[in-house]
Amino acid sequence: MQKERFFMLVSLIALAFVAYRNCFDVFIPGDNYCFLYMFEKWDAAAILKNVREGAPYFVAYPILYLLYQLLGIDPAWWMVISITLHAANAFFVFLIAKCLLKKILNDQTAVVASFSALLFLVSPYQTESVLWTSINIRWLFHSLVTLAGIYFLLGYLENAGRKKIFAVHFLFLLGLFSYEFTMVCPLIYTVLFMLHRKLNTTGLRPKMFLTRIILPQIIFISGYFVVCKLVSGHWLWHAGTIGDITQTSDYSKTLLKYFAKFFIFYRYLPIGKTDQALRALSENSRLMTLSVIF
Image (tube, rainbow, N blue to C red; front, top):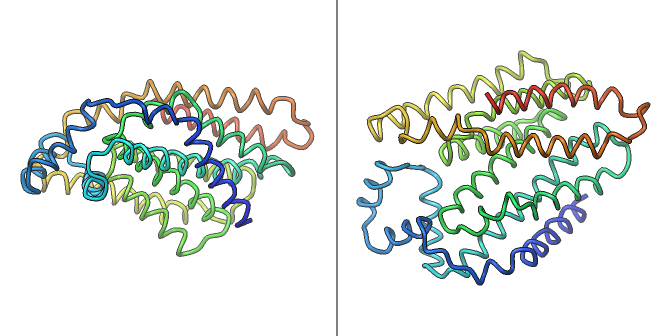
């Protein structure tokens, strides 16, 4: 198992550098580099004041600043970090897909999960996030902690443990204070829990799930608003917060397309083996899609 995961991670990183090798020849001196200029010219107090007025991402900007201290403004090194983070995200897509597919398929789960990760890795939807370093690194980092949180949640649903639930909540907090989209994660977690309940693959009861997962995250979200109020004087970080949460057209369409590919790919599986699982997954996927759209 460990060898398989290590091989997959190394393979995805290698494929990512091959697929995005031309990005090293592109330099985009846009808004993504203005933050590096801030680090170059201002002191920490001035940077903090500026990002408070714009979008004070409490986790992402310190990470960005740390990377600046290590990498400077060399585009090549920023591209290396960007591609590596994207490959790590694809690796978690592989792990999540494998966890979900083993509920449906008895064999070939690793092969199909690898195919899912490969689609994510080379999807045209991902090119902008990889290319527009450095500010997009916070998006890639947010995706990493979000996907990792989903993976640990799946592990917790199968075999509850303190370390796993701690990882879920810690990653949720990192994501929450990196980007507003994390607020919808409790809905995604609920859909995954309902799927496991329908397939009888979790011993976790609804009351336990609500008290151990959902309720703490609601408290975290409330704390997020309080921190924003204390830091900036506003309950929301910036004017675009509501828009970032509600403007779901891009990722909802992407989600629908991936679901469409999923069901087209699996429609020819033997019905006797997968009918119940596919029916449950279909019902939950519709609920998940609606939760993301609305």
